[in-house]
Structure formats: structure tokens, C-alpha cells
Image (cartoon, rainbow, N blue to C red; front, side, top):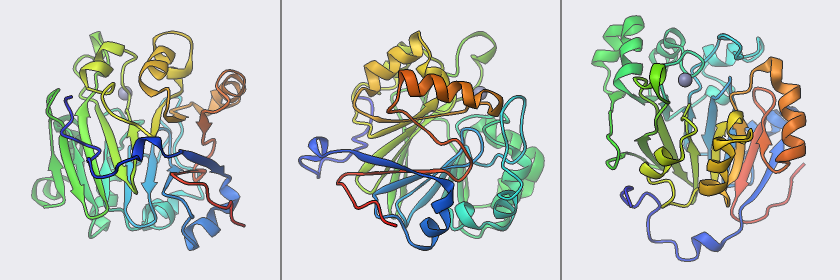
Length: 293
Ligand SMILES: [Zn+2]
């Protein structure tokens, strides 16, 4: 057990309660924002691998400081960019921004700097590599703001971030070998509303590394992973071995491959959720709730 009791021990029966989930089309979003969903946790798709995790109170963005398309990966649609710029909609009242690693389809320093400097409250926690690129764009802020933190947890010693309504466990997960060996990549486990959501960043499809990170020791209610983990091979073996009882969200899907990926997934993995468009939401709860309006 490498995690320092990330789940807590004060919830007997937690493991046996039913995980329940549904997906909301973007059309319901206005309602969703004005009247918090009757669910324990909502995931909102941002750009590429970016998500907002919220229980209606605490709001955490992971890999969501992405605005422009990068390589084959998408940015924010034009009607959502003003929300990013004005810290409204999914970008309002963000308590914490986390970034898995420095690649530009996961974090765009210029936009991240602008976002954080506009906010009065948002904390930012990431690796020396990510923060290093951020310092190139907003050095004074990055080096002087008490809301910025740089962490570099080794295997076996995850970093814990405590918020009033959530706890986040950040730990290393390899991005890969050779040209990727030097990339610092974090897994980020959000515990909120009695549930756990794991975002694995751009983790390599290496089962030994997932075991080294202790992911066979803990209960994950929802895992957020690249769609490549559902292709035949080591990725889908990892999904089976480590996340057989977890809800699953596939992302990091190039817009140009979206139709093909969705067709494949609906055939092979019909229960895996794909949030096709920015602002699409999936809600996960411990007990069934009425679907609402
Ligand atoms: Zn990457």
C-alpha cells in the first residue's frame, strides 16, 4: 500500500454501494449550471483531456488550461473561449487547477497564466517541468503567488492536497520510455463527495508502472483515460486489471478521429463514456437519483 490511506477509513460499506452514472448532453448545460445536478460528482469535458470535477461546491480542473488546438488535438470551441477568458460557466469559481504534464495539449502556459492571474482564489499545483514552462510566460506571478505550488512526489510518497471539500492525491505515473522517459507525468486522484475520480494524464500503457504506483491497492470509482487504453493490447489489459469495477471516461480523442473512435467504442466498450463535445457532462453518484428535467 503506497497511498497514505487516500480513501479514508471512516465509511464502512463504501465499497459495496452502487455506482450510478448518466451522461448529459450539452443542451442541458444551462440547467446544469443554474441548478446543481442531483449527483455526487459531475465531470465536464473541457478541451482534449481537460475536465472539471465538481460536486456542486468544490471545483477542480485537471489538464483544462487548454484553449487552442495543438497538433491533431482540439481546443475550446469559439463559444466557450469567452467563458475561459471571463472565468465563467465551467471555468467559474475554480478552487484548484492541476496539470498532469507539460505537453501543450494538456496545458498551455500562456492561457494558464492569464487564467490564474485573473482569479483571486484558484490554486495551481504541478510539476517542476510544467511550472518551468509557466514561468516563461508569467514569472513574477509564478514565483511570488502563494496560490502556486510546485511538487515532485516520488513513487511511494504521493503528495496530498487538502481542500475544504475534497482531497487530491498526486503521484507519478510514467509517460513512457525513450523520448518520453524524461517527461514528468502525474496521476491525480480526486476524492470528493465520497467518491474517487482518477485522471491519469498521459500515462504510458505499462501495467508494471500502474502497479508500482499502487493502483491495484485502491478503489477507483471513475477513471479518466486516453481512448488509446481501450484499443487492443496493454491498454485494455490495464483497464481490466486495475479498473474492472470503475466507471470509465475515454478522452484525449482527436476531433478528426471522433466518429471512428465512438463507433469502435460503442461496439467494443459500450459502457465507457465519451464526452464528445466540450461542456458535455457525465454525473456519477452512489445512489440512483431521478434524471430531472
Ligand atoms: Zn503527453
